[in-house]
Image (cartoon, rainbow, N blue to C red):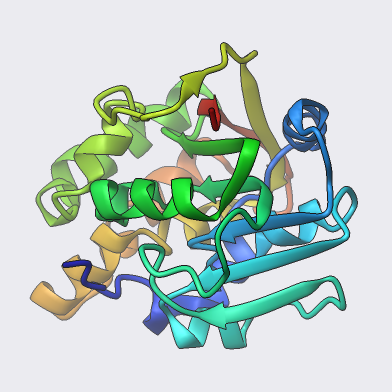
Length: 249
């Protein structure tokens, strides 16, 4: 049975502000695969980042997430219907969707139950796409501090599901007709404070705080400042996207 372990509601506003969005090229590619663009479902929508991008292509979007606070903080748009619900229990009828997306959330799902639901609500020939992004890339000196923070400081506080992200979703078997896809990267400009705030949205950071009663970001602030001296300087941060796409038979 699907259960919901809430890793993000307590920091929903920061999640919305500092988590990166996704490149236009990704959505253009996915939509080019769709036979029709009437209805899309963004499952595990969080604050609706992916759902908002889909409004440029689809008549309407269902955006679901089990976190009520994430849904409450989502940007409202007339084409989007937000619903607080588990990914494994879609509130729509059979063969409803032309496209189903899961952005940086599939690793939290009960795979068997979710994929069964995907097959139920997807139109024949519909597209399913799930992706994750891995480590942020700034520069060798910043990335070295990032790596130490990720592994040595908060490493043991990552939820078990993080292993699927580390494996770039390769260990998740998609029970659909596979479509070979191009590579994409997220690219965004961050100030030093933005970058640290992004790190602060990690579930491992939240778990560290609960266990130690202090903020692990403080342990690396001075190191980051030494290699990112101008706090107003905007630097490009990049994340490689690992994408799986399938078509319903």
